[in-house]
Length: 136
Image (spheres, helix red, strand yellow):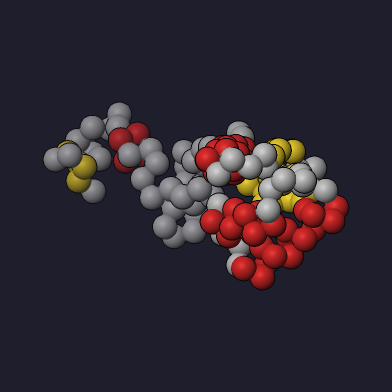
């Protein structure tokens, strides 16, 4: 066999496995024909860390005596992208129970939504409040 212009007999010190020690080896240590390769198995790096979901936060709207119900419905529709029917049901839950979860998001998104609610309420001169709670 000729490797780099030399035959095996030209250089008895070098064999094919010396020049190409892992040629044809797979992760199981076998060559293309299913036999064990003379140089051993390939090393396969295992991931050291596992990905995990980011912590989620609940955006909770609080009831007050001054913010009109239709304004709360419009907040739920515009900021939280609720349908009109869902926004009405959620508004009634806020009104009757004192608070309700408007949505569950990652921290950054939840903070942004809460800031939007408060800013929109202040622009319209309503005291609507919104809080964040970690999801358990």
